[in-house]
Image (cartoon, rainbow, N blue to C red; front, side, top):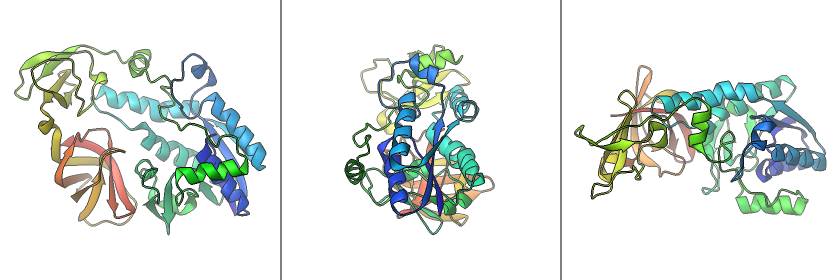
Length: 349
């Protein structure tokens, strides 16, 4: 079996590559470049990010040690048009996007997967913590590391050609496998910031890309102006620090790009139960109305809900109120351990 492995240069993908090679598969590694190396030279990388020059160096060392071919793909322009420009568009519309979800669909398990299959791969693998069983996507056994939320964007028909060798392991087990195998990145830090904002300075990133933060009104729920904000891109739903003092804690309830305004309320006002989802990606057959659990952010709790499909829209009503349902973020639906599907949160109703 010829398996192409997405090799980032980190310990997770290194162990996935090592595991498959040890199992006797014919393995080739692919490493993608999302930003030009010069970009990282000009910035201070405060926390670990993926796709940096040091990752490329590590990926080559890993491939050499394990004894596999490494192919480096320069996808900088494709990444710019597919992910970065989408990220900027969503913020211009007052939304909070999830670029990793989009990258997994269009780049890693889209363009790259098509290329790897074209070049002879029977299956595609990565170091993600998730499982594919009989063409269905499942959570990883390690709930702490589960990444099925970000992988729910993968198109259904592609799952039958994907394997996740780390889906049944914990992070500690992965590091121990790497240590025993003598893989030099066994203690390497995990990626935390976005690869295109390696210094974590989102305000500078927006300014460099022509998205100028303009001051505007802060409104209460009755429409009264109670302060001024310093640019919509500096806020997201549920944010508490809004720069005003009213005697009680205020949270961002809504972002209104048409009026260049943010609307604030109490913590209770940030909770909601009904919202719509656009661009659904169903990974299994679903009825027009079905029960599931939903997660509206990577680190949020799953909540029981009813999902209703109507024309091209999806409407969700949760059993209990959910904090900070945010347009632009991703809703992922589960039935026990299986991922049912996902979509982009469109509107809180």
